[in-house]
Image (cartoon, rainbow, N blue to C red; front, side):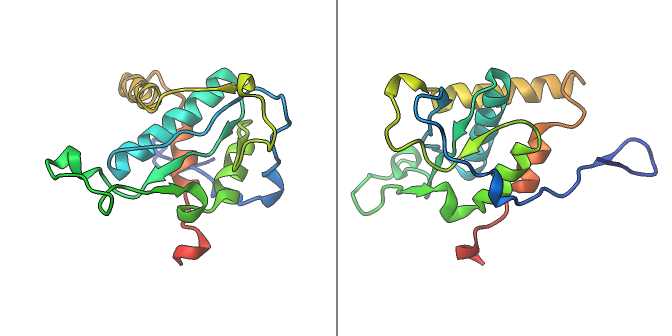
Length: 168
């Protein structure tokens, strides 16, 4: 981390996009399972941050989530049909997996693209998206009272969310 001349602002180092940090989960290892993120893009990103915070707090690896392609029409008062329902978008379609996984790895957090092929359901810890969003909200409240880490994981995640090669 670099300090700016003013002494108040800190600038995080650029994340390492390290493909070697992307290791498969070991069958039987406890992990936080992937969740389907919903709502608008910012709500989905804040829920992703909650997932990272929970993984750090519980010291468990997690599986990268999937995103919704768009807000459900029903939530905007529009009749939902098969044609206008949001579709599930894998993390790798939107973001560079190696970049986020490598950045989190340098902070001691293990993230994985997929669960192990033959994982035991008992090994997967299920957290609801709402729980994850509330985890992020607690962090924001602590940050507003200067009780949060001065080098927050939030910055690490935002800096490591690079568009996937497919989008470039």
